[in-house]
Image (cartoon, rainbow over all chains, first blue to last red):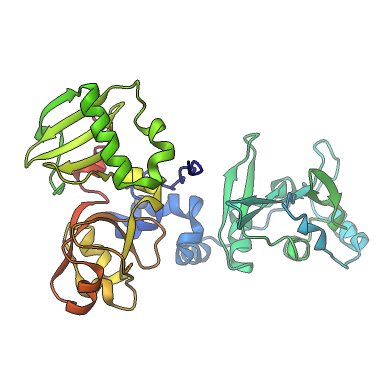
Length: 200
Length: 181
Ligand SMILES: [Zn+2]
């Protein structure tokens, strides 16, 4: 007998009940928008632009840590390299106003690549919020930068994380350190084959 | 068909006899071989299978209060869209162009040009009088269940009039009846 097919999980909109991609054809697209921006931004890139324009960028000043993990079937995240010196970044960090570096919670970003459905991979980024970065903003920036879908989701431990569609592990470190100078490269880690590996 | 459908149109609900249950199972397995491996999960032999008879010779196959299939008179069973979304490859697919989406979602039957235009797509092997999934340009999930009036070849060559009857579509009465309590 044929292999048992896994049921496809479809993202239905709680407002109009349709699959999220059909909200634009629903009876009241406006009402669906707030949920879509949070949960299916990759389907409606224009909505993000709208939201970005409205929401003046808030620079967060608190310091915390970010993590990136990569459980690739092929372990390909090892290709991530970043030539920048981390020391200068850290000094910058220390100079930030109100940025206490006391590490009660270890501030780190963990990046993990997860392969779903054989071909599709997702890069999960955890910990950006520990650096005072607003995850919804970060998710939008990541989606734009890598021209892909990115969304903030609750991770298994109830902590929020960012899921980015596709394997973007190759230049995510550079992007993070450039976009958020508060995050030192030394605080970024990959998860490769279940092991935590420093990105720097 | 389900444009104004609601539970008011239910005329009877009956748990069917084991022999009828077997027959329904068999015709679903014959129509959708891709569903066979999960048929035991969908229509567990031990759970009662309810056939809900509605107006206009419409029948719904309901398990645990969830409508899973429907048919007309003795016609072929067709999955509800929620079920098709879970197992998208059990039916042949026809694709309408983006311009046709809003018409399909208002219940209109599917016109040939919406399938033959650059945004449309047809599987040549589809015969007339076949249940099909109606997909849409740029969308991942089906928006309707159709029943072909012409073969795909005829849709291409004739390219006029209604090619597929729209049986069930997103947001129609059956879609809204997620459960039947
Ligand atoms: Zn919606």
